[in-house]
Length: 601
Ligand code: FRU
Image (cartoon, rainbow, N blue to C red):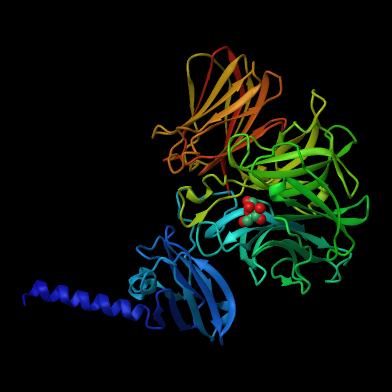
């Protein structure tokens, strides 16, 4: 045998041995066409599991002494590993663990599953690398450390801390295994990843819900206990409760679960304290019937069904999800009105998911809408604003909301890997009365966001006409900006963001139609879904003077009208950061006070 052949053989032996050593503390046993058992001792913090997103889900039961500790569906890699996800072993240190795995059902014999790459690449480890490495990972928007996220839910504020829970899949960056992930913040900008707060159980996975601070101990779980009410999504959808006596870090499930049962597809509980009736109110949706159901309670455990609202009102397509109910002040008046938020999917103004709302009166039992049934009001006019709900117990009577910044049309396919989906920036809402006599939500970026402003660059005042006027955005900003512009619009004014790769986002004020539009069809990566390339339109006030406030992160643009009359949230995946802002008008328009800040986070 020549030297070359010898060294190849040696390498091969080392490779085989290496692979065997890598898993020598993990024993993999192929037991049948669809059953593999993995045994190991929990002497490290994590078992890292290789995931292939296109693989079918295997069902894993985590057993200790034969008892099921946790169950989940995991896309264990068959042909190739896309990334690793951690199974957290901290609670089971020193214990013998058995993973009883029903591998995906399309395997015709035991050999098929033996060849899967997941078995060789599973490893025990004391670390899991969740570094912020992806190009499209937002810098200053909330994202999960890894894995999939949808709806923000269960949010509450207490003792200077904003708690944010979210629909989380800890075992892949696509939807599944719904768990309440948890992050906390003292400034609404910087989020600390906390351990997941509520895992699924025998009643099902944990869908959206809400939390309240039970200051007066109405539930008996202790004064100041956090009480979470959420949907248990099992064979059917029922409502359950859990409480926390450590400010939302860990929760104990209530022994009387489920607390509200129904034979309809009901979900997404939102609980509020009603000062007028001195009772708790709960709203949830009968999703397929397009109905919001109202309940009341004295102790958060026993609920009485009151009224329902929805038939024939507003947008009626798809399913109704994630409702919220609150009383909002009307700007510039002493008046207050009740607002019922209802997220809808599909059926939004731009296709897919969106957030509608109704303004009216609520007496603790019935909601009466002020507007005609055919009137639909949208909270955000972009394509990527869903499941918007508010924080409970916000300070100073604030109504602070956050939305999931994606759309069910393509959320599972956006070009990220280590994580999928971010939340919108936090926003504060109130109402304003419009010239048409209707009340609308006015949305402004939460005041905390001003702290993100880094160096300010002023571009002064200039006129624009047919010729395109381009301004370089500050360098070294890494594509992260807040932009503010006062526009005196004579007719149609275009505002365009672009980069050296030819990606661009075109925004247009039309003063005849009173609209603002945003076109992302050439904004970079758009072909991962045919529903992604799109142009969205919002109504503006009739004024020719418009103030544009824009937040740009690595994969999103949020536009806020200066008066809070419209918001537009759209994802974008530019090949490189936007470097230029350009203006053009088909009349003579003026840009006053164009200011750009780089974002400091
Ligand atoms: C909305 C929603 C909710 C449900 C959750 C499940 O996006 O479908 O109705 O509770 O997501 O993850």
